[in-house]
Image 1 (cartoon, rainbow, N blue to C red):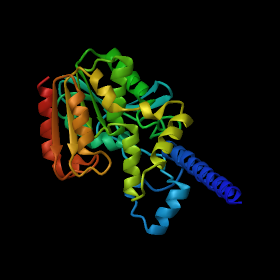
Image 2 (cartoon, rainbow, N blue to C red):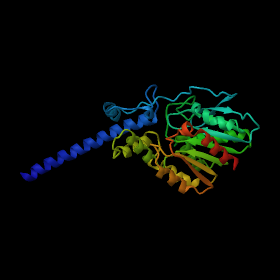
Image 3 (cartoon, rainbow, N blue to C red):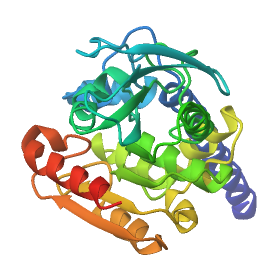
Image 4 (cartoon, helix red, strand yellow):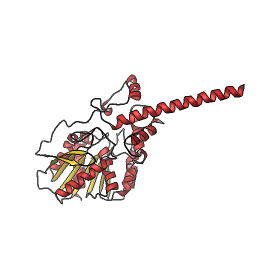
Length: 316
């Protein structure tokens, strides 16, 4: 009798564990879709201050990130360029207001768009650089509502690089923040593009770590849901999420690299930045901003940022 009772209890435990596993995967697949697909409405995750009830709701229903829209246009003469990449992407080309000595291609971060790059582009435009501001797929004037956190966006970096090189033979530099930085790194690795230098800010080390950081933002234990989310996020979008690791892309970068990081970043750890920096086999420089968070260096360090990026470019 005891043996029969034990078997019944074991079956119930196994059935319960399987039900939990199945529910966790269903929730993860649902979250992964919302994480990689912008919606028509919603609130950006990094702008939310959630109550306990809202966190519980978010845990089950996910976050509706609104499709990023360009809210302003450049205060300079500019030309809208449409390029066919993996999807049709929209760019703004802004010529330097002085004699051009180079090109800077600017790529935005997650849940952002090219209008958010105007402030950064301003310093380049005023100091002799043509600028190409790019909307990744799913953002601004580009097609779709999908984002792959830099994976498929790498092809769009390649497309923009090849376009600008077909227009002139000036030195060409790539700037990217967060997702944009990751896409640049992957483009160099996958497509062997050869920019004269790159400026990358706050790239995550691995896809898994950046998903874990999102759980920490909600004060939710990441294990095991973070791994499930990476799995489903890749599967739903046609790639293996656990291989999307900028720390591995770093070893393929041989052009001069400026890596910048905010010490108050709650999405990317200092250990991730140091690991990426250590893997770069190129002339490199790491600059950190003690009071800056993720992708907000200009808010408290505008003058320092301007000085640092111009000094880096002028040294090339």
